[in-house]
Amino acid sequence: MDFNLRACGRHGHETYAPDEPELRARLQVQTPAGPAWRCLRCADYVVGDPKGQGPADLAPEVPRGRLLRDRRIMRLLAVERAVRGIGLLGIAFLVFRFRSSRGSLQQKFDTDLPLLRPLAAQLGWNVDDSAIVRTIDDAFSLSATVLIWIAIGLIGYALLQFTEATGLWLMKRWGEYVAAVATAIFLPLEIYELAEKVTVLRVGAFAVNLAAVAWLLWSKRLFGLRGGSAAYHAEHQAESLLTVERAAAAAS
Ligand SMILES: [Zn+2]
Image (cartoon, rainbow, N blue to C red; front, side, top):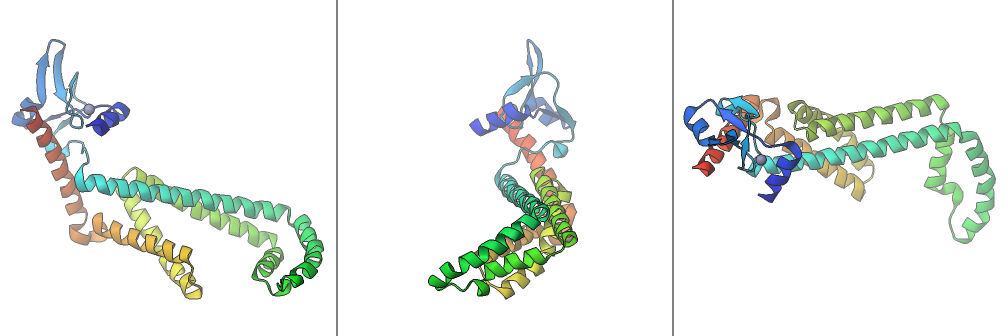
């Protein structure tokens, strides 16, 4: 109940006047200050006009049970997507920085590397055979235009992540579709990466994304699965009706 009160404090009470006379009568009381309606979330009576009205199965849902759990998973996925988007923007920024200060960096790299060689040899590390050094060398050999395109690609990917995050956070049906499709598109790339080299991070990312796609398709009944959008809306209407009936039962 505390959780409900907090939600009401933040979003306002969810009062609703159902069209069904019997339910309507049980959700309303007369007070000296005028009629009051029972909040669907916290069950308090609130004086004044109801926030909404219409058939009980179109009432706002006060999520509980499975739908509440679903909502938590979607919010978790949304946060994960947003964090990934911020990380991608950070990398894009570094690519831009690298592009503009490449000349001085390369000079430093070229003068420092020979100095490093004897020390590295002492440690038994062959600098010229090192993957890190080769990666840095490769980066220096990329043209400025290629670097711009890499940065633009990263920003585009980041924007996609933010779009997914927004849709999932707001529980929009389009958000569920965008998240499922956008995540699925990159699965082949992740498989390719795994085929190249298996690391804990790659396996983890692949597992999370595969589970997310499967869960979204199944739970959200995307692309006609499990009755598709008709069943999806029926489930939510049943939940709305249940919300109103629960509040009415609490009132009697
Ligand atoms: Zn309330």
